[in-house]
Image 1 (cartoon, rainbow, N blue to C red):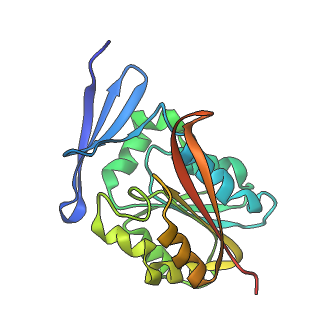
Image 2 (image 1 turned 90 degrees about the vertical axis):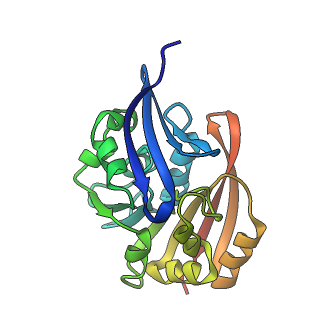
Length: 227
């Protein structure tokens, strides 16, 4: 087996650790320094795609849909959203780490079909929180693939997204009938409770990291009531 080749590193803000991008043949990996190890692999991305397919399903015929994607990752969440959304949509993808965006513009981009080249995409380098706090009734869907889900792993500030305050902010940022879709490594009943307390109608889906096999991940689907 061929060895891994290191393509780049990036520092996570506020002491969150170091990300390393590696390649072996056509396989890519993004790992976090320390015991956590690999965060993403280009061979296991089905649950990231399902996040977008489920979260954007209501927007297939929606005119001028606006969607926020929190977390660039390897581009699979963004690419799947673009598959679903019509030609007049706008997708704002936010990531704290500029190197991750650049990796997706470079060698890593081919994995997901270079979604950053799509004219519907706007890149926001910074905290997705900045977008969510900016306007009320602004987005038709918010897709969060940030950290490990409701418990922040690489950046403690991400915990705000899943707090009651953050959940209320996301609720307000959505249009009536808008959907929040959240990727998580596993279930979290307390997070479901916070979503419901905020006013969301919640559905929890279990998806596999590869079609029909691999680890089971959780997708939280939270719909803002139209009232």
